[in-house]
Amino acid sequence: MPSLRWAAIVALAATLNNTTPIAAAETVGKAVVIKTAVTGATGPLVVSAPVHRDERIRTSNTGLGQFVFLDGTKLAVGWGSSVVIDKYVFNDDNSVKNLTIRAAKGTFRWISGSSSSSAYQIVTPAGTIGVRGTAFDVHIAPNGKTAVVLLKGSARFCSGGGCRELKQRCDCVVASPSGAMSDVTKVNRSVLTALGTQRALPFLTGTQQLSGGFGTGGNCGLKVAIQQEHTPRPQQQRAPSPPSPGTPNPPDPPAPPTDDGNNGHGNDPGKHDPSNPGKSYGPGRKY
Image 1 (cartoon, one colour):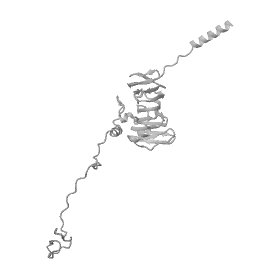
Image 2 (tube, one colour; image 1 turned 135 degrees about the horizontal axis):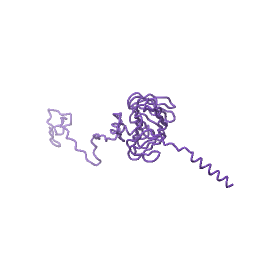
Image 3 (cartoon, one colour; image 1 turned 180 degrees about the horizontal axis):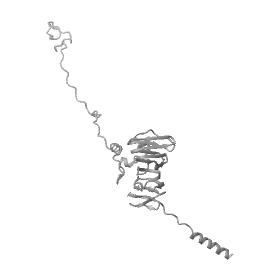
Image 4 (tube, rainbow, N blue to C red; image 1 turned 120 degrees about the vertical axis):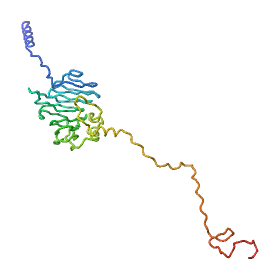
């Protein structure tokens, strides 16, 4: 029995010595801006920290992270967000063969790098975004409802309800995990209402500021619309209030005199005889 135990120990030691070390996670980019709290697979991220394939990046309710991938692709992650760098296959010519981002919730800005547009894919709970030399913002609500706003180039959003082509700057589509999808329209305040929060799309409303080449030269008028909504309107002039109860009305002006045929000496009104002076001689006197 002791010999069998010893043999088992020797076999286990040999197995451990021959085990191949786990390969280090593949670096696919780095952080260039970190604000408040942004965490990765190993904890809080800082500026210049590497990001890796299959890494999940999370931000706090005020957090902001900006990342640049090896091929120059840029990804901004806004407040309350969660995203996974799902696939990353790098070519020898400093381009990627496949870069798939799986966005779970929150706000993101995507700016394509130097790789072929067909290499990029962004997956959301409501559908998939196909990239064509593109810059766009995405917001994913907690219930999975997703809005895509095109900022440059073109993009296609496909879900169970079909596909929508975004071709012009500020084109927007909103889709639900159920497959329901809106027509393409220009982004406006109603999109924030559909997403259930006025904090949606913070890079366009101005709630969060991007830097380091992550801007796109405008906010589709959404920032001005939000500012106007919160600007107090001037009060309209009110009509004069009626007099309060108990306040006497001013007296009416005196009526102008009228000629009713009575000279003030007893003639009936309207029956004045010019030959009769209208004088009274008292009781019993004749005239």
